[in-house]
Amino acid sequence: MISERHQSVDDFQVEVKGKELMRFALVRCLSLISTGFAFANGCATLEPFGKTLQQERIPENWVSVGRGWASFYGSEFHGRKTASGELYDEGFLTAAHPTLPFGTIVLVRRVATGRYALVRITDRGPFVANRTIDLSRAAAAKIGLLVAGVGRVELFVIPPHHSLIAHL
Image 1 (spheres, rainbow, N blue to C red):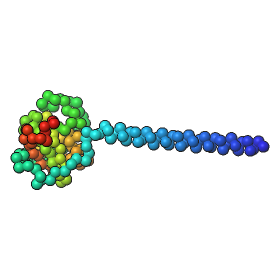
Image 2 (image 1 turned 90 degrees about the vertical axis):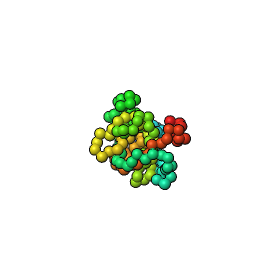
Image 3 (image 1 turned 180 degrees about the horizontal axis):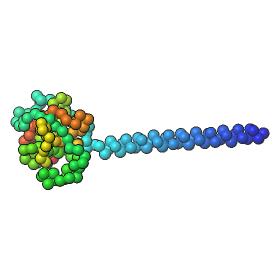
Image 4 (image 1 turned 60 degrees about the horizontal axis):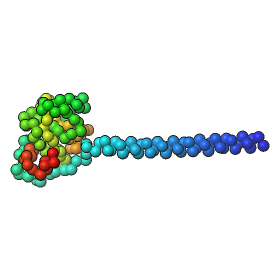
């Protein structure tokens, strides 16, 4: 009789531990899901899968300012003042260019994929040989440069009153 009672206590402890493990697994799973949603919402401005734009669809009145290599700002510049006086925010679609006037809206199209981003020039640079433009982290994500770090791009200045930039 004692051994049966001991056996039922052991069964009860195993059952309780099993339920605790299931509860822990459920809580862990739900926390991972909620973390995933929070991460996705926090990165919504990055738009990692930008739309594509083929060369033949670019209007003729958009001035091409050439092709070259693009790179992006490192995170250590986030919050620092740019040459235009604005604070650099890696979540905004901005860029540094050596000569274009501050405030110019530029379409940066990655040559290899056609993915593009509209950026506003807020800084001077890049200060690395053979680079044409430095993009913010958000702009680099939009055209798919975060992994490679650099890529061939084509730049187009968008006319000031174009409907694409009316909301900017």
